[in-house]
Length: 297
Figure (cartoon, rainbow, N blue to C red):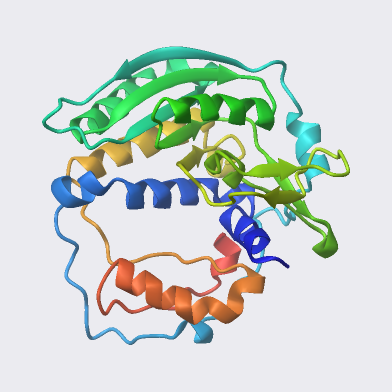
């Protein structure tokens, strides 16, 4: 498999991991938060034994209801295309020049969720502005992934460096036919100038050429499928934004822990990923095996 297709596959494996990916992306990208607003990490317990990545039990797919990852056809039957793309601006704001960090974030919210999330979104925007970001907030409904990417490309030309997608917004899919793989791929929204093709016209992209590197970051918050223990879509999103606010106010110190998900065909490079993780996050931090991790993923 070509290297850039492996990156596609790793970047977005299944819809189940969108929330985790969103948290990781925003945590890494918000450098002003890390530099100014967050207390130092909890001291590392240096007595903890280090467990090499290759010795950790390989996880397995084990959904609580026994289901398997859905195919594109199954996903399309549930979601499909919900009319033409409609995007409406809600607000835009800029940080004071003395605090501006040069980054501009677009926040795009599913239209049907906006009213119930307005207070949480207002607070989130204020937090970002206070950290030096310029922000613009939109509501959106309908459209294809190609339509939505075209909209993001217009924002990119206006200075957007990243975006947060909230709710059930268009989801691009990619297929690796030779391996029977079908997966959602938000790299489609991160790469502003590469070319994606769908040779067989089945709705899934199957080629990625040109400049294949991402130009912007994308975070996605999708909670509509997460109904375990009577959870609700809006309730989970409100809880996420409340937690995000506590973090940005310094009320939730960093913890010396991380979850690293290695797809099966990247397993030989697990040790390298572990070394990068430790050097990026915490010096001398150990890795502990998580028993039956796959049962909770």
